[in-house]
Image (tube, rainbow, N blue to C red; front, side, top):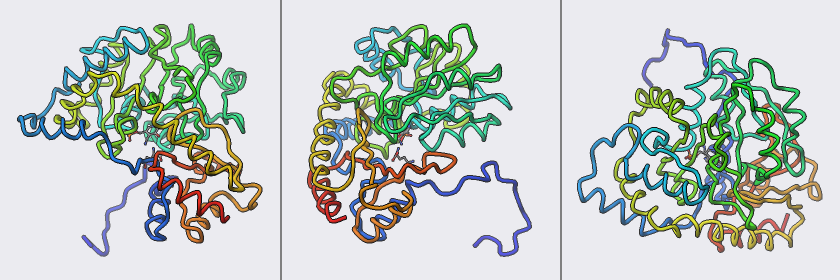
Length: 387
Ligand code: PMP
Ligand code: GLN
């Protein structure tokens, strides 16, 4: 305890914000020794080749500050990957910035562009950092529901919500928590809405490589006209099964990246050097990212098959680490009560999807993370089949 009767008070910049649902459910999971399919992190080991490369980088003396925008060979490897996957040329010198994670890239992009009163269109259910990131920067979140149960965007509603103050549209594909993905017709609609406006697109693509059934990932990197007005954010943690590394990057046109880097240089300045050196080498093999979708698709399919023997009803998952299920055949409790109860009574932790709505909208859906070992998924399904 620093001081008992501390006279110092501050006005909260985020008065409506408490502890995130991920922390709450992971805390409950360990308290009740539950199988944790809540917070999105894998329980299987990451690539030994990649950890070996980090070790070598440390032993070979790559232990001092990297350049603020990132280790150049890593930025070059990313540019080459973008060229290969999306046939788009991105300048590694001026258009790619390495960040300490995807969340940081999103926060920095919003901090870079928002002026007080600017409106930001956010689709709900939404990853939990978006709304606080907007409000802390004096922006105004304009919330639009994705259409339940397939969680697609109603573009007519987007058109109706656009005003002269609309500054940013936030996209997330593949989508957390629902596993929905943008399709080509979504891109056509988006294009027709933003063309001839000054609207910026913030595209959260941290699950870029986790997309299934051979569906093409509709990255903004594919579309030069959209990329010209975009910040596109990525996370190495999510795709290389090392969420604790907190390393990612943002791709944006040079003029936007220049402003982004002004904010970045006075926040963290630069990121962990040995991990960047390692990733630069790891990315040289295309298999390092092409192997990810089949691996996770197999886990999704395995989990779905196990779950078909329970009373949970699946919603489709086309990508990400996640699969949502309705539990209306089991209970009509609120999703939060249900998620807490099954953690305590059956030893299985999940995430209630209402946590991704500002209003707490409850469609009685819970999210499962299937980025787990088969033994974990089997143990979880065994417990779930008793509910
Ligand atoms: N966006 C979404 C949709 C996510 O699920 C995550 C994963 N936590 C992130 C961003 C952030 O990634 P990172 O852990 O690299 O900050
Ligand atoms: N992205 C992860 C999830 O959705 C969690 C990130 C976090 O704990 N902040 O589960």
